[in-house]
Length: 266
Ligand SMILES: [Zn+2]
Image (cartoon, protein in one colour):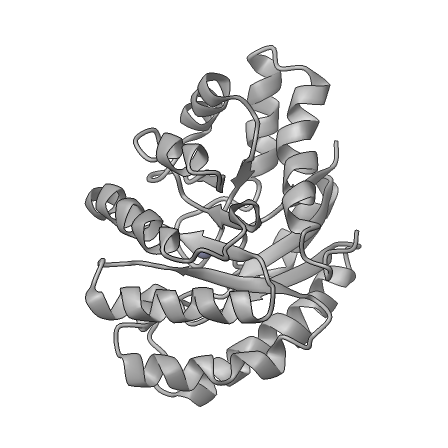
């Protein structure tokens, strides 16, 4: 079995996890810039973080034969102060030259504030200016439905946006249709206690079909499972999905989306 982990926060994981991913058939890991479990005190903290994503993680992954790619932004959790957020955003163009940077992400909303929305829209414009794909985070729990609606309303104002180059992640049963019907890609995040369980993700897949859908573990510093995608593949097999159907959702779909970035070469 081969697969792509299209959303993982490897800076928070041990090297053992890279070995486990490699043994499970992982060919590539894509790491969106996000909250690292604490608020960074200065833009310099983000400069170091972007170096970690673009210089150190690709080397750590390569030791296990895995390609490592990244997405850059200031995440919504730390973007509620627009002055600080813009200081961090000013660092991004320099890093966009790195050969493993795919696009802008994971941007989006956390508490659905006006400031978060303003910074989200500035990131979308940055992606358009550089012709890059976009990876969007949606808020959790009670904020998800409203946050997804606000995100879709905001994106609708960008007339030049190619919706096929945008993935809206962490969809659940009550948000997946709105995302897919509007022409975007949708990501299902497999988390042990929140977001989608393996069974719920497979239910969504069976109801909506595989078109423009991917799965990820989004493993990070919290309770999460870096092997959630291959475990979901096993569960699909137990639910009588064919090898072709499994390969489509865990390998071909992420590859099709990611290849829209000229940097994604596997
Ligand atoms: Zn994430």
